[in-house]
Image (cartoon, rainbow, N blue to C red; front, side, top):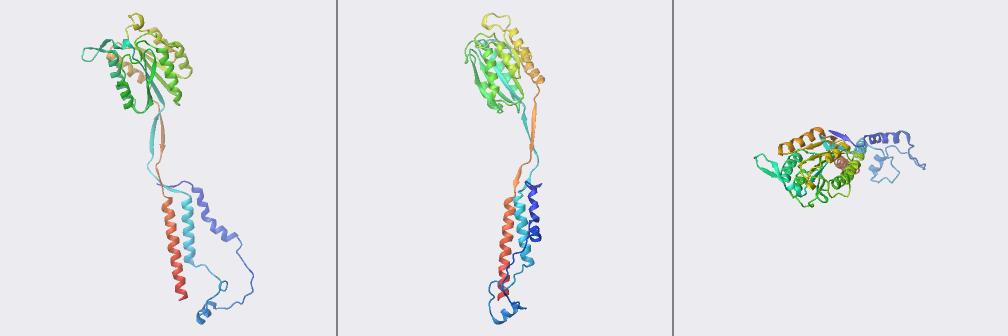
Length: 326
């Protein structure tokens, strides 16, 4: 499909007619004697007419060349282009932060695997998370890990394969043995400062009570709620345990409710997988579509054609004039 970027410039096509019609021709008053058949007389005596002795007239060929060149110049100024088929680009309108607890208690082997054997909590969580990430095609995701401190393991990215690679590199205790749930939420909120989408989601997974945060989880959740961030919480520990290994179900549930999210408890591999499935169903992906047509600039073709016509036309007129004088 052909198109013009500036079609209004085609109005210049009639500019020569307006100039010819409404502008006054250039005139000079000089003393002269009109001689009929002047060209024939000068040719007969072998004389050469001086400047101003002959009234110059534009031939039809000269006018045709001039008009063609002018038309091509105007078309080139209008920027002709060839448009390709429409291309639709989908952009996710949701950003997700995965906040993963890697404290010392995540080393417990109390998750029943598909093979019937007990597996490490973190290994099971990483396996389920990989499947969850693989299905988020188009979403931007970030990964935060926390123990005694919270760290951004991977900033927001649409390269989910690299995000999975960062997840593989996480090991139990690399962020300290304790659990800083409040700091993890606070860091996730700061991470969203680089996000300009409306849908913002934190998926927080922890297996213990907060023991080392500088900001309480409830206060951090309140700040997240003020900024329109939803937090879905998942508990994978043992609520019957004591001390720092005890799963604080009440705190995780309160965090989720304050931000409009939901609290889940997962005690085995299947329950954890179902939890992420339910989260995906509750917060479906929102997509913004933008369409555009790829274009190819054709100005050079029109300009080249105008140059060729102008040069060839000038050459033909010079040859015609030489033939007339010989």
